[in-house]
Every structure is written in C-alpha cells, then in structure tokens.
Image (cartoon, rainbow, N blue to C red; front, side, top):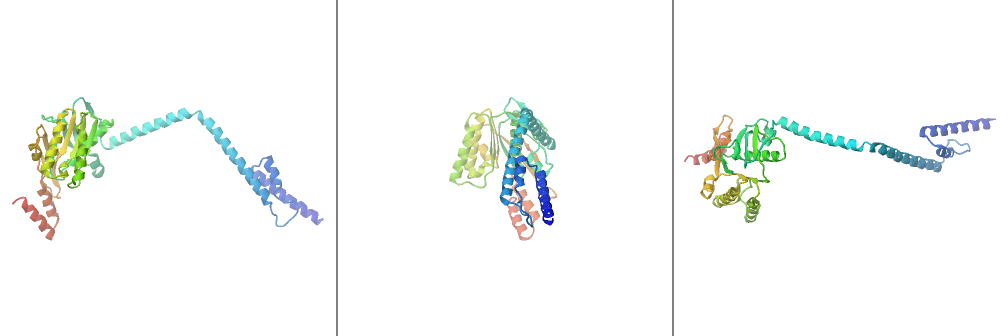
Length: 348
C-alpha cells in the first residue's frame, strides 16, 4: 500500500514538473515528447534528470528560437520595405534641416551676414570680426578693410597690398579674417562681417609665418610652393611675413618679384604682411599699395593701444620699443634693468 502511494506521489511530482517546464518554455508537441524523457520512470531520491535528454531538449529549443528570430526579422523586413522610400526621404529631410539649423545657429551666435557677390576683382568688408578671436575672447574690435575694387575700397583700388605695422597689432589676425570670409563666401555660407563684398576666384593660397630663417633646402622648397601663383587663374594670395625665409635684402627682392607676377594677373589679389615695406618698394616696379596697423602707446594695463583697422596708403612702424617698454614695466630687478637697457637703444 505504501509503495503504491509513494509511486503515485512520485509520478504526480514528475508530471507537475514536466507540465511546468512545457508551459514556461512554451514547448511544441515534439519538444513536449522530449520533455517526457527528462525524468526516469523508476523512483529515486533525490530526483535526477537525464542529462543527455536535457541537452537534446536545450539544443532543439535553441534551434527553434533561432528559426523564429529569423522568421520574425524576415516578416518585419518585408513590412518595413514598403516604408523604405518614405524613411529615406525623412532621413534626407532631417539631415538637410540639421545642416541648415547648424548654419543658422552659427550665423546667429556670431552675427554673420550673407556676402554680396560682385563681378569685379576685389574683397572688402565692414566691421569684420575674426572668428578665432571671437571664439576665444568673446568680444573683439571690428575692423574695416578692402583689397581690389569693392564699394568699401579707398580711392586706390590696388589688388596687390603690403600690410605693415606694429608687432602683436593684429596683422596675422587680419589675414585670418580675410581667409575666413573668402572661404565661407565660396561655400555659400554667411560671413563674419556687417557687410562683405567679394569677387569669386578659383583659388585661395595662404602662406603662414615660418619659424625662423630656413636652410637652403627649405628655402628652395618654399620658392617652389610659391610657383603656384604664377599661372593665369583667378586667385587670392595671403602671405604672413615671408621675409623670414632668408636675409632681409634677398627676401625683399624675392617678395617684390612675386608681387610683380601677381600684379600682371588682373584677376588676382594679394596681401603680404611684412616688416620690410620700404625695402620691398625699392625693388618693385609695379603699383603696390602699403597699408599700416599702428600703435600709439600702452594703456594703464600695459596693453598696446592699437588702431586695428589698417590705414590705407600708410607705412606703419613695427614699434618694437613698445613691446620692450611693456616687458620693462612688467618686471623688476635685474630683469627690468635688462629691458631698460634695450629700450634705451631706441632713443639713443
């Protein structure tokens, strides 16, 4: 009697376990039959499962799950395929909006304006602001400048210009601003100026300031780099202190030759930053305008007092004595005496 009750209890527990497994795993008929073989018919304690049958069931369930995933993905892809063109158009629209919105935010943040395209050879702006300086310092002093034939040009509409002036006065920043306006205008973007006019050109060449006097090999390479300006295409050439490539006398002759080549091309414009304007003019046989950025002294915080907008047809001095004076007033002791001795050389 006891044996029969134990057998019934055992079978009931095993049956309940099989049903629970089938229900929770959502087994199909084939898998339910496999589940029947998980437990042995003979009574044992504790109850053990047949590992081989368990592994077989697991593999079968995993295989079915994999097939169902593939089938589900296939069905979903068939459904989504009907929306392919719509989704692609939505993505294109969102990307187009994102580009326009980014440009609009950029233009609003920096108060950019659309350029005015002209049929003349010239580039000029009113109240231009260097974007690099704006991003670093916030507010900057706006400047006006023009090269070539624009509504903002002085009476001398020279296309080839020498830009002279004080050390740390903003000559390099001026070249950067010109480059920023030219590049943005050619891209169809607004420019960092209240008003900006530009005649389209085929190329922009920017030659940054070199670090010290170059050796013979580097000097030759630099001259080869400048040979690109000799063709007849329309171009803008911006050069920052090219005189450092060799000694002043020779560099002035080289610069004057390049300026003459550029002046022969009526569709080219050039701005050369230089501390040797007089020496370059002595060697130049074409019309070259010289503009200057001038400093008048130091303020109470020992910052240079500079008129950032260049004066047309004006040779501005480098005024290194102001830099030496600033260093002298910022130091004391032996270091100050050193700078004072250097400063005295300018007034002896």
